[in-house]
Length: 224
Image 1 (cartoon, one colour):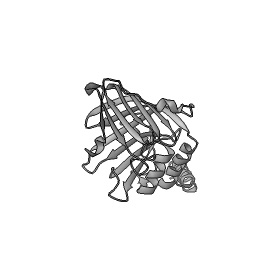
Image 2 (tube, one colour):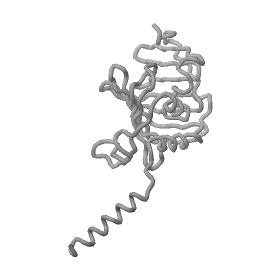
Image 3 (cartoon, helix red, strand yellow):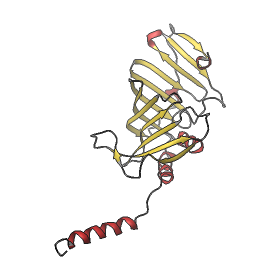
Image 4 (cartoon, helix red, strand yellow):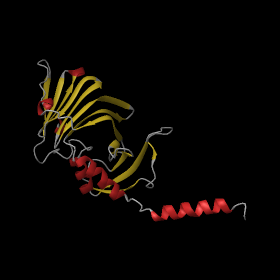
């Protein structure tokens, strides 16, 4: 017993320390993340989008409340632009611009970028928020030294495009490092954000886009 006494004292001290700490709930962490984005007027980030074994990469520009642009390097020269009212997708392989007028009741500002104060507000309204497994930090990927908090969101109504959304939050910055959404068909779409630069004073002109003169324009592509 004497031999094990130091270990027992250390164990009891650790237990008392843990019990004295207030355990953070999933809703409280989500509120902290929302607060971190509340002061973000714009940001630039490297983005990776993965779906069905395919990966797209590029530079994302976002300006609150609803301006979004992605200049892709993979596939090269592809562009996505949302100016708050019109969504444009340029596909150089087909020399085509897919264009969709969304209006106030369409895709809307909240869905322009999930990693924003508007996107977070939308998720809080339409999803229940919980830990994926526990409040403990986990590696972003197996074998990674990058630690994140993991939240799992479940939709409240069937009108939401994603059944569930998993959010990986950086432990150091409380910014969103990865968003993964699962559709009704159980397809996974992942968004990775790296090299995030906040409040760069990105001008609104960055979100103006003129398609190449040789490109064909297809309107209302979401409903055809």
